[in-house]
Amino acid sequence: QVQLVESGGGLVQAGGSLRLSCAASGSIFSIGPMGWYRQAPGKQRELVATITRAFITNYADSVKGRFTISRDNAKNTVYLHLNSLKPEDTAVYYCNAAARTTAWATWDDYWGQGTQVTVSS
Figure 1 (tube, rainbow, N blue to C red):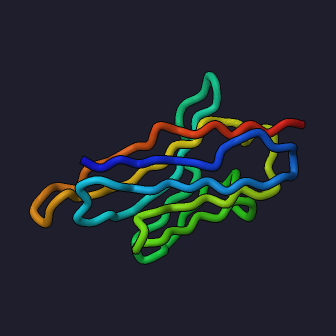
Figure 2 (cartoon, rainbow, N blue to C red; figure 1 turned 90 degrees about the vertical axis):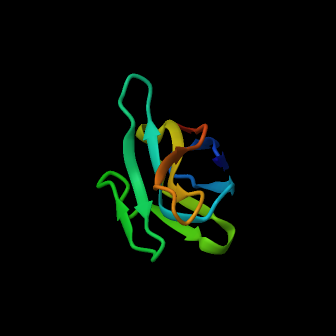
């Protein structure tokens, strides 16, 4: 099994910044694309950003130019730098990763437990 543990959420004023981290551990043979999703109260979970093992990134239009996703393959860790935060960025942020536990295993999807980001106006 693979576990994803997020950290770095919190309360910040509008215009402020945060950095989220997500470390993968467990029986890891290989990790593929990693990403961040978020879910605000009463809304569906939505994509924030993804990054491949080759560092190709993709962002939701709502965060382009404000958020930056990065990863450290040696540490099996993905980061999300959140800048110029807005109240509408308030949500629980979830880490996601595709991983294999052995060379012959299928790619499975894993999720973290979520970390709360609250932006006050």
